[in-house]
Length: 165
Image (cartoon, rainbow, N blue to C red; front, side, top):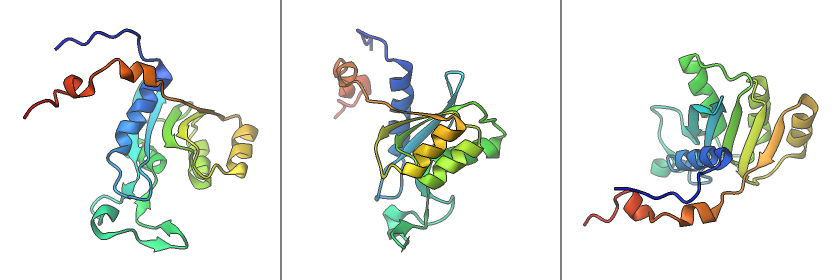
């Protein structure tokens, strides 16, 4: 099958789309979040919010809630950073594309991991201290708006060969 592309997807749109795809693996129904860590225009890790490997998933047994937080879930940003740690991939001077604005704890973790740019799709309890902290330490933060016109040029069912009966 040949797909004719009218315009090329810009880098920020490309990486944010990968974060959106990663979010489809989320196992906590409270929020489906995906994150892609990028260095030198290459994805070096991806993560989504879900349970510790081998533990029960929220979608199977429900969330384990304490003080308004699901204790079972690891945030997408943390899963991506932990993937880098597990496989020995450096995160210094990298960027992260995340579907939701990072919480304060994830913001601090990303800063400590050397992430220099945070791109997000949706505002989500944007923390004023996190924003001030990013500014003080020189981490840039930018919202990415996905360009619907780009995606409208495709018939996704045909592109993914989903018209099979």
